[in-house]
Length: 85
Image (cartoon, rainbow, N blue to C red; front, side):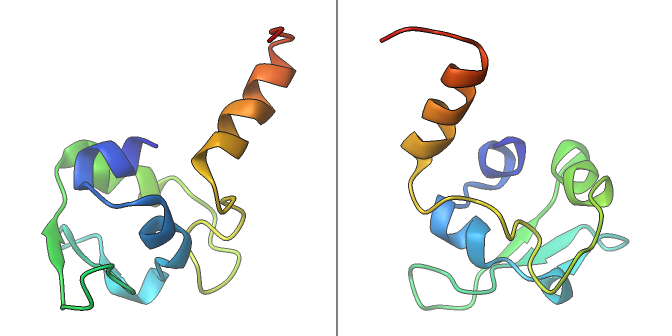
């Protein structure tokens, strides 16, 4: 979510973001599959640059386990926190 807030990327764009489209030394992210279907390049601020830098690369995608719906994330963490309703 930190990368989404600092870049404006949508959930489905984050789900499809590939490592080869992130240039951390230059601080540039090219959206792998933008919703607009136009090439989009985003300058990464310090916080946004630090997010992928701290992740383990386990394949081509940066976030391979993101769910299709954002609400699934909230339900998962609400259950872990033992929140009711």
